[in-house]
Amino acid sequence: MGSNTEYQTIVIEWYGPVSWETIEDLDAGGLYLFTGRQKYQRKDAVQYIGITEGRYRTRFSRHHKAEFIVHNLRCWVGQVKHPSDLGRVGLERAESMLVYFACPDLNERKTVRPPRPTAVISHWFNEHSTPRYNRQGIFKDFPDVISWDGEHWREGNLRVWDEV
Image 1 (cartoon, one colour):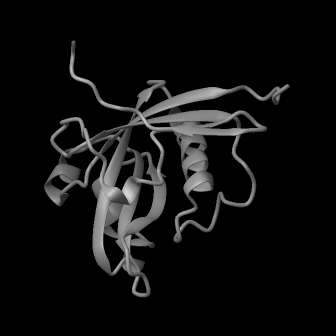
Image 2: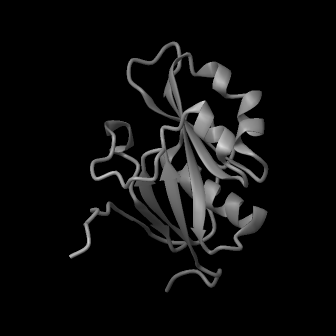
């Protein structure tokens, strides 16, 4: 049987890539990820995943990892939709899941030991809140659903359907 640790499901709506104008309009924080290339890389990739409780614009204005992404720096912001009262501990739990699973080059922490049992469900939108029917190639190895029960990883992708 799986671990006794409480299992949590977190749903995130990802928007992006977002422009500086859109970032300016966002209030409360959540998760974010940077994509692009470092100087020695040939293909764009997810480079860094982080969290902020404050305004995204403030967090990004002097971000310590953005300077390493020298080509095609893009930002995606993740707003937590469930649970609505996630708080700092929950944001860190979601971040830990995504970082441990994706192992972005610029995340040195949170890759050493597995996270607490959690499922992260990602819904993808463009910066104008329109659902993405086709995900960008950069996210081909970044599943929409990532689940860790303490023993086994599970992953999968979701298809977007219009109302029937």
